Image: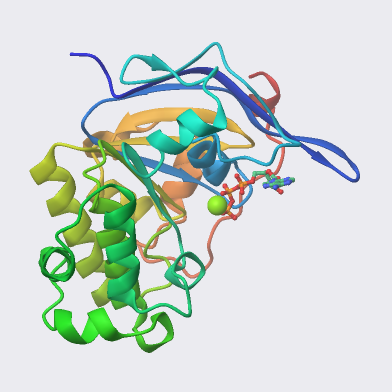
Length: 276
Ligand code: ATP
Ligand code: MG
């Protein structure tokens, strides 16, 4: 079967006041209808990768790739108007903090209604209530009428998830969607995303700092360091990952059998990175 996404030699360079920053350096991977986790420390290029797939990078940034295919379609030469049709409709993105993604002066339900209308769905309020129920919101009427600041973090994240799913996307990119939530609520939101992705046979790119979380939630994991993918492994084989950076991440995860008082630190510029 054709993969959903095929990326080859993807490089993104940001122009800044103090020169250019190469945030992605020759990244390549394929994605099927699976849950792919992307893990790496802050600044390793995870969000840039998520945004590059949607070509949502600043106009001053430079993106090059030998391949950037979604459903067999080359995205590299698509203009903004064509990309806008793909964004939201076929590929959706959930961001870290719903407060920044939801309109603060519009009721949650009306935002979903608007998203539906943009995509030509006119069944209105009843359909919104149905969607809120699909993300396991028990009191959809109340949530419909709430403004974003009146929602808890987990509830806001569910509304965001609902918004992203109104169009039945084939691929969902979730950039640290649960990092601001407490553990219980985080698990609930993950379970919702998991159900929807599995039921609909979607692909998921799940970006996180937390190797432990991604290891238990995703099928496959890409480890990023300094703008490169340094290791790819199946989540079930995480313990056998060989790359020194991955081993470092694994060792820094607290475990019940081997509790640690001191977290090991990672060397900043190890020889294996230079050789890449
Ligand atoms: P975090 O875990 O903190 O979210 P990340 O892995 O998502 O980090 P990116 O946001 O992709 O990392 O950033 C990768 C690199 O690109 C960093 O060095 C960052 O400073 C730089 N960068 C990101 N966005 C921009 C931008 N708009 N302009 C200039 N540089 C940027
Ligand atoms: Mg990020």
